[in-house]
Image (cartoon, rainbow, N blue to C red):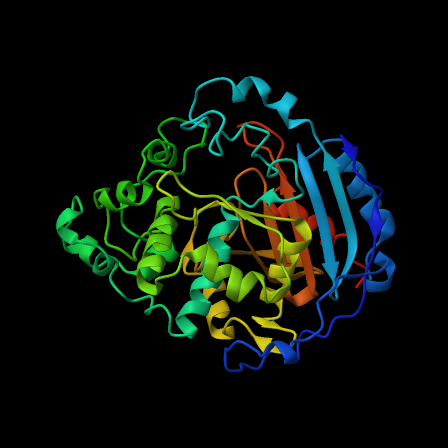
Length: 404
């Protein structure tokens, strides 16, 4: 494993906490826009992080202790204090799998849903844009919160079938009629779906859906297994249905809306958003960003939706997004909200809560609000049995390096 550039050690003082008041969400005139945001850097010791401990983390990453890690970034007090990138020959690493039909080689082997194809994964066509996989769902959640606040999208309590011709949907019963946008967003649809299996397992419902041409129809046609809102059952198709509903309700593609109201205000100019076979923006895994730009989104989250004097996302939406709505039955007390995850961690004998996104292969953008810290990890460990850097491991590595 070879780093693309030497360890960059960086840091500063951030005054996020006082900037939490909600303002009217509106486009600011161009002439009044704040100067472009630029990341600052500092040495770890300036913000109470041990250079020695971070160097040890770097050695572990280089040695492959956590498998194929592509980047590891730490921001504290709004300054980058650790930034490391690693190069892997994915065409060689996954070359045999890329040529072999299977659950992760979906439709055209040369296309974006062959997860072993190094032209598409994990970087977009040789650029620095890295697949976010299901972290895309979390970005979509932010976009929905903006659209609802702006009056462009109805409330989360709107029935899903109100956006479809119910007579053309299979397996409609009273439970499916009671399914709402909220249930799509917090993964409690009640639909019969099994995405708990490895994605390399052909019985995983996602891999079955992905072989169809209309992913929205496949998802919505599934029979009901429980009352909506009662059981957490992770379902990537649910976010695809949300993407379709967004276009129907707003008349705007969700990629276009997110670009105009989220990415551009954050100064994110370079991105790629993949599309499903039917042409719909892939709301469940299609977004590619650089590591630093993903950190911008997490900084916006940390600042409770406020960015350079503007309230881009209502603070109340973010509070609901991160409030534990369902236990995920994972190790510890991991919980799911509005397409965002949270779990507790220990720091100096006290229990605190981390907020994060999760993406297939090892995408982990994390906010530690109490410690004014952001961690972004990207990687591409996509086969069962590979070493893996979980959010808990990343949090422990960073918090154990803190002096204060």
